[in-house]
Image (cartoon, rainbow, N blue to C red; front, top):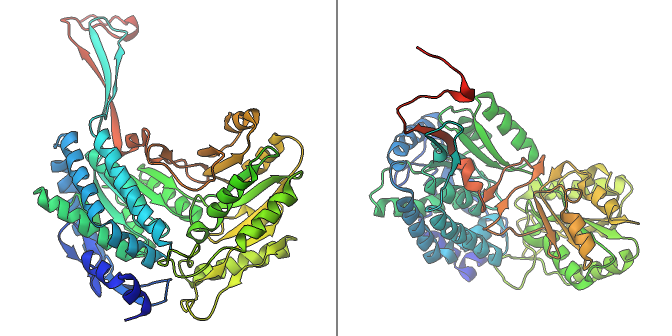
Length: 517
């Protein structure tokens, strides 16, 4: 047993979550099965094998899908507030297991323990949100153009919702989709990232226990595991009307095309190349806090991570110096140790991409203010730890246009009016999150106007990272256009129907057409 396990209670957490040395990665609820080969989950924290998960075969997938489609016929008939009660109980179970699940997230994915616990809290929060929403799945009543008629629209359950999630938020993204899908009367089939399969197994155990306590059938919460080939089973299956996929732009384009080919619906949450504009009227202290956390939190592996800092030339040197000073204070190491600010990247492939990005920015003419580099030696045995880097660059650099999932921050300079900064910010293919630091009301309002940020999220005087449950989360352009979590994001999990009722003995035709028989 390694240092991490003994010092931080990881073994106990795994036991509480029902994780064994070898786990079946296909499930319809309480039933677990799998005929595919195993995935080994190694922790980026210490490089040790945590456990293995057997993957989903075609036969396993068919068993999951047939059970899920059958369960949907039952689940959709349960009144939405009662479905909300099940979700409420699920939230209570998450409260009970917040600590062990947060530890697993931290250990399997590499984010700090505070962030791991925060991610589980997001799961709890979306359950609370969904419970209230279960009594508010409302349509509209409209006046009909026909006398003696009433017209309204209503929302019905959609069916089986396929969820493909990414490693960086291995539990929260599933919960955002699942909690809403469940109260909408849908059943879910989830494929977690093959880099964090144990988080998926743990969540399935929790969900299954709630379903069992409520005497609900198998198939409402389903799990499949494996690489992109298992994901393709989901995206190409006509029994799945909606696929929600979180990941890279490249992955999203493949998923979108596969689902569109069968005229299904897709909800896409893809890449971010998020910027903070720092105006001459910015509070520098707030700017540094927001920028540093946004750039190095989760080791730069959030879709909302701050990638670009667009700074007015009049304060550029001041902001640059303050950033360099702040970066010098960062502590890198075991994310389960709350004294550390930055944990590891997900795996050594991510380290290679990080190194490649640093080389490219220099090759294109950029200047490394903080050079970064891989960390070795005691405490860094996994080979996944890197130093957060800062580079002075130009927005048109190819590497700046690309989203590198690592703690690299690009400093860009603008001069003149705010519109020049907005043009730089919008001059990328991604459109997820954005922010401006300013105490100037006109600048803030312009940034939020139709001529301002083209992102799905636009903030004033807070950074790009961090999503609130109450707001719809998602972005524009090659970020995919989907929305999850709050506001009216629930509508994507339902089908809309328009109804007209004639309560007279006559049948007037639309537009006054006469058709006498």
